[in-house]
Image 1 (cartoon, rainbow, N blue to C red):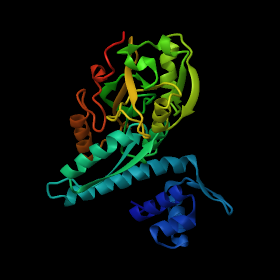
Image 2: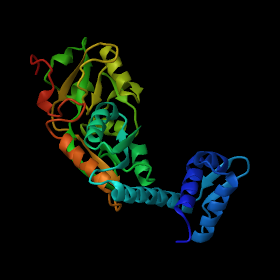
Image 3: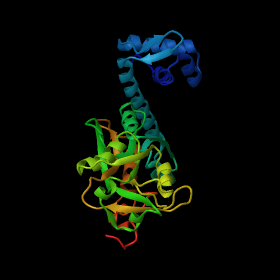
Image 4: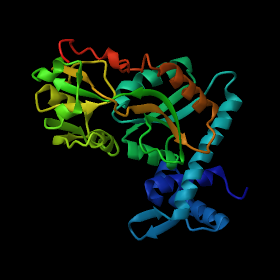
Length: 318
């Protein structure tokens, strides 16, 4: 091998910081040493890795982006080899887990905490992103796997479904529909909808209406579920969600009421996404097994049970 892991680390630092100077500060070595390492890699691979911009730093070339993805995976595999050689029967290492931003406050603390308690030699670095960025992070090897929905995953993403989360409507205390066991989309179409405005998530929610040949009245938009819950609780309109928090209260203390949608609607499938073709380490496999044990049709960590009948709307409606 005509290059070193240290040179690869310098390249990753420069790629992620977009600057030789910032990379040198990050890896605690001189800027000329970082430049020399990058030049050596370019010579060895026969490809230009960066475009140098005068006084504006670096930007990756297509070849540089490909190398960055593989370099990150290579570093993680080397860390896995070290962990395997030193672990003495227990798992060790750091796992980079992405989670859909709408799920993360409910799912990640309990799921990550229980895994680390069972494996004290392990740590989890979590990142919360919307679906589009999660998929990008997997493709760029910035995360090892993602806890998310199966929406627009793509052929290069391996997806393992764990549980189906059907959509439901959320109402405030002043809305008469809160007393219903079920509500039809046709009844909601003309009412003010507070839309979860995140890439791919909004397309899924609006698609529920499109499949029923309905056009919703979107009166408010927000990328933050807790903002939406508070707006619903204060009477601004209703919302549609799949994941259901255990709490039936918005952050301002006002009550919200989940009601099941009548009819057949595509559920969002909660599961594990990873980059296809890259075999997981023992640590990744162990965490995936932990997720299979913890995320079932009877329970999801930090979330109300995903069984439609568990929605506790009062029974005096159709």
